Length: 190
Image (cartoon, rainbow, N blue to C red; front, side, top):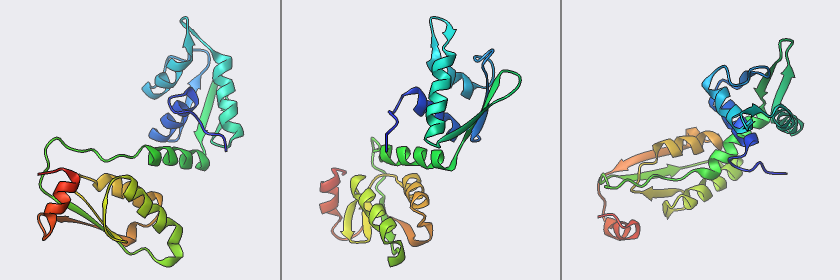
């Protein structure tokens, strides 16, 4: 599978579609008019104050061939671009790869304990979830119990929805516990 380079115009098209309603209409006659989201995409296709229409259409065609978007020419010189299900999955995959925990300047003195009991029929999702927690620098207390001192609520929600295991995950907030000095040293929070 050929990857789409981050920060490329093709990636920006997919990203803007994912952030918006999943479709937008671009006027090829006057491409800089319209919604802010369309203007952000078009900005990458303007060279020497002119719109590079052929390059834009070539990128749309490439994304359509990969079944990431669907686009149609409308009668009035506009193009309707729609994000497909595969395109949504591609964007989620890219967001998953970029996922990082934000480490605050000052620790709020709360531990986040992630517990999960994902059934065997979801083994691949369970293993992927566990692996992603490790890559996010969660500390494994047991095979299905991980801990971190950093805020992670949004990241856990995102991972749970990606792997479709929301019902099997529990996030607890713990203020202190026996043996936490070892973990304070590990995470270098005091």
